[in-house]
Image 1: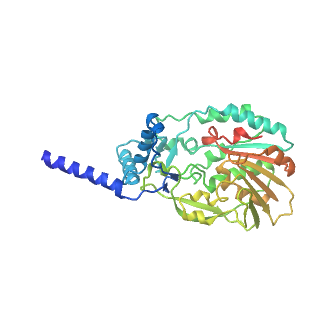
Image 2: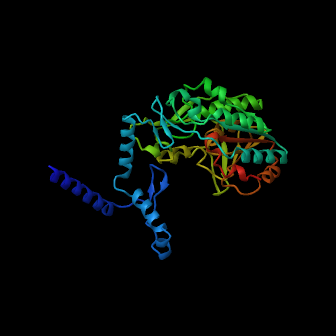
Image 3: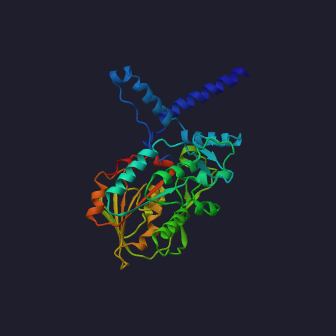
Length: 362
């Protein structure tokens, strides 16, 4: 029996080795939305610095035969055994994934930069910080978890940032049973963005539109899914609001323009959230062709704003959208040159601490 088992194991090992060399290598993982490691360049310097072996290890890991299937199988086994945390993700009681929130270390940098900017410009500046799904749905993750108390971060920003702070938390807690966050992605849904839109309208004295929602895709697996590759997770649905307003949208970094706030081509790709505003761009200018208003706003943002902006767009003649991760000119000068009277910072609290864009604005 031992010889049979030993022979079987040896046969499987040989098959895996053969598969590693025979199976074509992919350069990009669509499930994980990232480029896979390349075979390391051989040089004397690389070998003696141990860089070669480290890169070779990454290459083997990324191109191991049936790697994605094995990762998904591992996730399901862990879940079956009652291990409800994998990496920084919790399996919720509702079947969704929740990303852990850690104590931030860069809040003071962000506050100083935003404060300095607001004091420099001649515009009304407001700041919206979006709470995490794991904070709003604390009752749906294991009781014994290692999440940092997000309330402390909110309290710190409200106390130390001297601009108009738009707090959406009460509205989110009251509507937590609605579809506010994706279950397999770190973003909020269009319904979550809609609640934030209502809070912004309340702050700005705008009469909000009562939108209806329509589904544009029902097979979305997002960034959190990419970490566990668990195909037993339910798909997410991409929703858009029904708005008949006509726009002209200019993407300054690529020189492209569009008549739509959406790019439907992304619905056939892995990164379906990029359906909103054609993914991230350094500078987007949106002109409302149906309004007689001459109001304008600059939104300084991360990707959370991409699904929020289509809700706000009917209320302004011009919306300027800057993502400071990619825009490296002076935002205050841009504001002055374009005579923009309103500025909204819109960021999610989960990734704000690591956002190099917001701490470099000028």
